[in-house]
Amino acid sequence: MRSTRSLFLVLIVSAMCTAVTAHNITDILKDHPEYSQFNGYLSQTKLADEINRRTTITVLVLNNSAMSALVGNNPITVIKDELMVHVLLDYFDGKKLHQFSNGTTLTTTLYQTTGNAQGNSGFVNITDLRGGKVAFGAAALGSKLDSFYSKSIKQIPYNISVIKISYPIIVQSILAAPAPSASDVNITALLEKAGCKTFAGLLVSSGVIKTYESAVADGLTVFAPSDEAFKAKGVPDLSKLRDADVVALLEYHAASSYNPVGTLIITKNPISTLATKGLGKFDLTVTTAGDEVTLHTGVASSRVAATVLDSTPLAILTVDNVLLPSELFGKAPSPAPAREPAQSPLDASQPAAPSETPAESPADGSEDSTVHNASVHENAPAFFAAVLTVICSVILS
Ligand SMILES: *[C@@H]1O[C@H](CO)[C@@H](O)[C@H](O)[C@H]1NC(C)=O
Ligand SMILES: *[C@@H]1O[C@H](CO)[C@@H](O)[C@H](O)[C@H]1NC(C)=O
Ligand SMILES: *[C@@H]1O[C@H](CO)[C@@H](O)[C@H](O)[C@H]1NC(C)=O
Ligand SMILES: *[C@@H]1O[C@H](CO)[C@@H](O)[C@H](O)[C@H]1NC(C)=O
Ligand SMILES: *[C@@H]1O[C@H](CO)[C@@H](O)[C@H](O)[C@H]1NC(C)=O
Ligand SMILES: *[C@@H]1O[C@H](CO)[C@@H](O)[C@H](O)[C@H]1NC(C)=O
Ligand SMILES: *[C@@H]1O[C@H](CO)[C@@H](O)[C@H](O)[C@H]1NC(C)=O
Image (cartoon, rainbow, N blue to C red; front, top):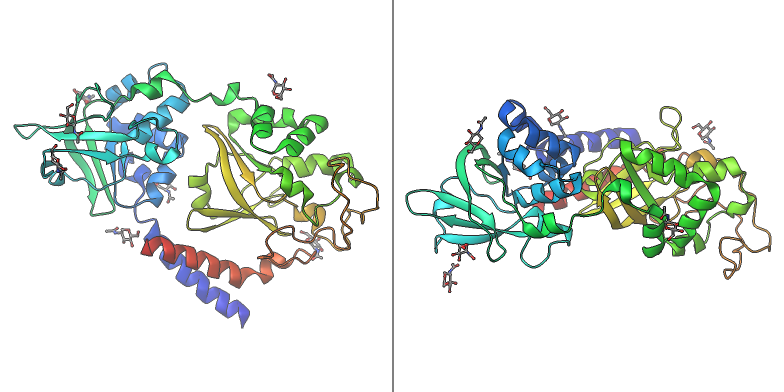
């Protein structure tokens, strides 16, 4: 009976999923070779995922020669921020561009949602010039209004409008203070600053930090548990684990691909981690509720708490709980021996919590806390219900 119900939910969910992913910017632009650079950068920076999951937006597209001017010698972080300025969080088609009551308006861009926008750098000024010309420019005082509406590329009212503009909208503060590029980032220092000292210390002492660093170039997403997470009840005593298992556990805390939160939100397939050595091993599944992302290990789950860094191709996110892979902690009895009264070297101030079930969910209890690895399947209906809730909330919002 349960499987029938699951199947039914799967059908509803997949039907709704196709409705949610109603537009695909990569697909819209793929038949226009003159926008191939712009399209390529949308994919590389994962902005395509952000655009696809939103509605009531306008994408201001540049042709390859205009895009080359924007790219110049700029690092990918600058290009991504600039491209975000070219995504307007409102729907403008050719008609609406000529209907501003004062002939001019400031509109919010995707860059404003990053929280990095200084002053009004997250806004774009659109002005209807006489003679049917519409100009775009950065909102900051003294910016030039020197980019013009050229033509419409695609309109799906009122979900997405894709229009061509002549020149890039340049925001001086983005060029002046580029975000650090991924290769220059000191991961340990950032983790320490973000309240993940224990995790940073483990990465260094185990040497796994080197694995992380060499993986950055191909895309890396770090899921860093907070210091609180390591103190939670049910976290196994890492000093009792074999070195190889500590390494696997730490490698499990990084996806071997670049997945900023906007990408995790639309992720349906399990994601591989640095611990993944074979198909379906040491992977993570993702569920979403609104803008909140939860990772599931098969043993327990954890909320993604915050973004520490989003610098293509490296994302560093914090998580509320230590991620316990079912390959290490999913079997009963757990390979992690019960704690002795000895104190954990991870945190000398924290008395070792007696725990009969070391793999017990350190999470909020929202997930089955049993130690066997069937929990994922047992939770299937709940999982689909959660997905359904998310989808409904997306549609209603
Ligand atoms: C617009 O997006 C909604 C989902 O957000 C979808 O249901 C609808 O079909 C889309 N409209 C068109 C014309 O694609
Ligand atoms: C969007 O379109 C591209 C190109 O057609 C395709 O490769 C990609 O899988 C599509 N994305 C989604 C989420 O369907
Ligand atoms: C139009 O401009 C005037 C003067 O700048 C301003 O007071 C008014 O709020 C504007 N109206 C709209 C709809 O933006
Ligand atoms: C847009 O820029 C023009 C030219 O600088 C300015 O006159 C206009 O007031 C600006 N529009 C808004 C809404 O700030
Ligand atoms: C690109 O756009 C600019 C501005 O609209 C135009 O002058 C130029 O001819 C276009 N280049 C190509 C190759 O279409
Ligand atoms: C990175 O930061 C850590 C901790 O702040 C420091 O110990 C280390 O020397 C730094 N590494 C580099 C290469 O600067
Ligand atoms: C857990 O899964 C592994 C393979 O993924 C299997 O060999 C093992 O029997 C399972 N354990 C339980 C308790 O279901």
